[in-house]
Length: 231
View 1 (cartoon, rainbow, N blue to C red):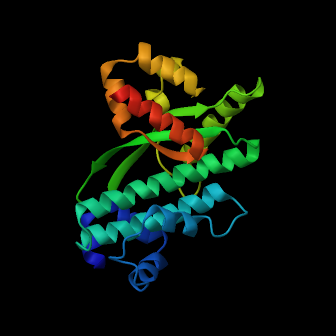
View 2 (cartoon, helix red, strand yellow):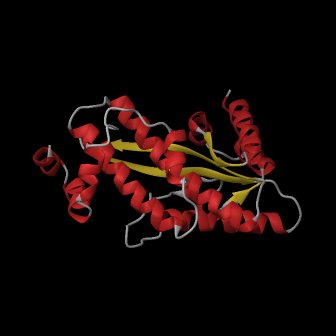
């Protein structure tokens, strides 16, 4: 198995070279061929709070990538399960980034929506976690600034390199008005943009939109709006 992994992926070889104990832990755990859904990954990552969560998340993510890579190389899972696990991995990391900033800024009315752009190789899967838009309710003067700050810090949490690497690249340019638009906008502002100024492909992309993190109720309102616009 080690020979096949090393031959199939330089990335997995690098992970095992830096943390050789991971291979034995994963191969002897009995977790291979056992699907991991979002909820299970979230429980594992957040089981112990405190310390440097950004560093801990990166270490955990690399271990999960090795586990999924072994499943892929050895043919333990099909492509559908591989994509589901990689999507769940990216979403767990994104939700952690959002929740850390929500807790720090005491934001409740803040929600992130995204869609996935997957490029699947035979071994290893590159996923760009792309929040399509960041939404916040505008209550008082502080909210727009606070939500924008939370969005920016969340992107930094995901992309900032540490000793354990990064989490996932985040492309927030696909928000309303692109790079010129605010990182965080109200639900009403999104409705106005998609209803009047958005290009056809932008409205079509809403078909893939789903709530990822933050205020679930606000997320449901956004999805309802997206469905109405997409009809």
